[in-house]
Image (cartoon, rainbow, N blue to C red; front, side, top):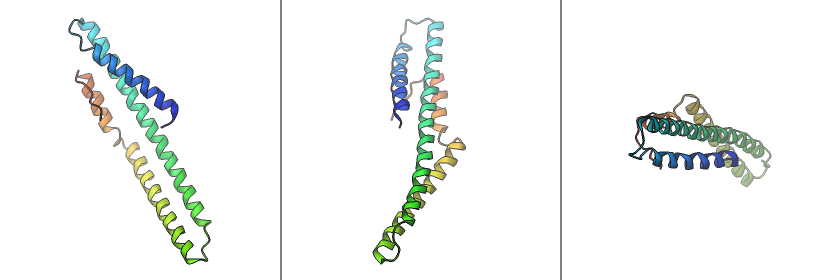
Amino acid sequence: MNTEIKNALIMVREAEKLVDEARQDPDLTEKQRNNLQSIYALLLDIDDQLVLQDLQQGIDKLKQDSKRLATLADKIPQEVERWKKVANAVRTAAKGVGTLADILAKALSAGLLGIQAEFRTRRSRKGTRRKRC
């Protein structure tokens, strides 16, 4: 997670916590409660977007690292048997990481990685509390 996203996420989650506590106040008017609920829902949406942004950046980095690993594996000398095993292991790791990055990218673009976040957001708009793992 890059520093900017991490810092923003910390601030958003602190605001989520405080707004969530405030909206539980039984003395709030309906208008106040609705305003706090709207703010809370927006904070949850922002939280989800920050997490998804970080995930996308992570996928992009995995793809880059996988390609770099495969390139470096090709530079390992092939004439010595023990180096062939090292090169093959590195190529296998590069292929595995690349495959994982492709799967994550497809899942993210299909919305599969955002389903839980969307469910939490919709649930929060109904006035229930958001559970954190």
